[in-house]
Length: 260
Image: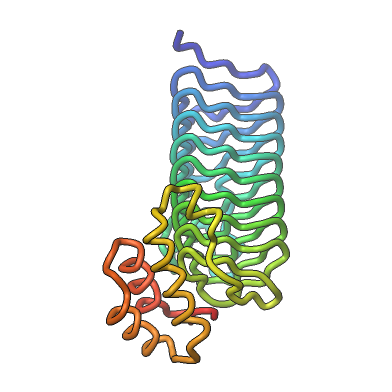
């Protein structure tokens, strides 16, 4: 069955491209430059506008607004993009904005993510795969969230910050620097409280590797070394594995600064 179902009260622009088995709910509005993949369901009163691509098998909740203009004084209506991948659960009143010409030109969201109610993904952000943003978590412009990170409720992330792979950000946390991969952070402003043991176990990171990450945490946060000297010590003392390699590369490439 390939039929697409559009509620009689929905408004779908002539140029919009809808895949097979797409459902558009009551009073939803779909713009002329929007593309929606197979089996995606758009809930009532949702608005998808701009140059926006939605992947396959996504669920878009009531009142969500995707592809809106960037909240940036420099944005003057340029052709910029929002690209959303497959199997994303985008709940009620989530907002995601397009990129800016001065930035990446696009906001990119990967696959298999959950965006709970009222979360916000600002212009020029990149969100990886398997990310969870809990109710009212907010990303300012140009942020990067790596795979399987979790942002708890009401967490706020300053523009240009990065959230590392499998990191866990506590509720109400204020993020003003990069959050290293695999770490658990909390507070206002946030600081590292330990490693994300639950997340590491959930993603089948082996005990030996978890111990190496724990040692990396001690070097980074308890040795009183600078970031550069902590990286040198990690490289010299820790067993080589993809997780430690990724952590070191993340620390070395930070432009915003790394929280400890």
